[in-house]
Image (cartoon, rainbow, N blue to C red; front, side):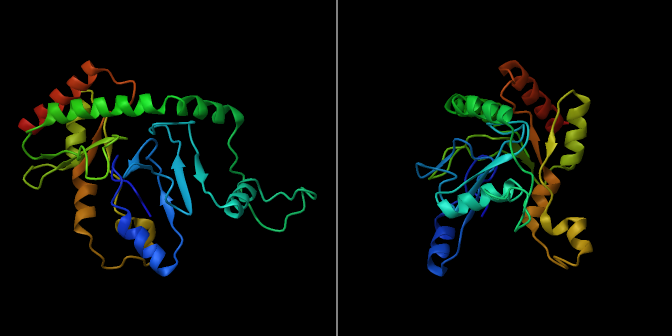
Length: 247
């Protein structure tokens, strides 16, 4: 279960209700939700297993890797074993199962713990940055901005993504090219799963259409939003986006 839309959690109540009704296990994708809440409860606390990412563009990063959280002692033990090659306590190099070498180093963990102590500060800073983009890009014709809040959460602006309306005569790829020529780095949105060549070669998703996802893939992109970005740099980004939208 994915629980985020670029900084906002989705409304999880219907999904959790279905899981309870049919006795389903919930795997909560909280990859970008460090510091986010849903109805005041921390994201990452809803799944039987929940996951976080520590990729460099997240609020907390260890360079790579991530974290699994659960309040089930058996699942926790299984995860620890699988991430550590399924070594046995008394016969270390005799393996009953196959596992993975997915351990995090102590240096990476120390880096993450130090950032965790500053997470409220990071979230506040991201929201300030989001507010500046919201005000600076408000009213730009043909540009859809992310929601600042919903009835159950306030955006933590993991990233700041924008989507070009159908009325705009160019797509995200062209917008990013124009911004690149002005010295502004951007990133595209994730590409739709049903259009991934690797799955199509496997005969999956044949003939499927998902117009909303397809539109976001082609017309959405992220503007710079790293914690080190200054207000002056943000204003430069805003001016550049306004320029390409007016051209």
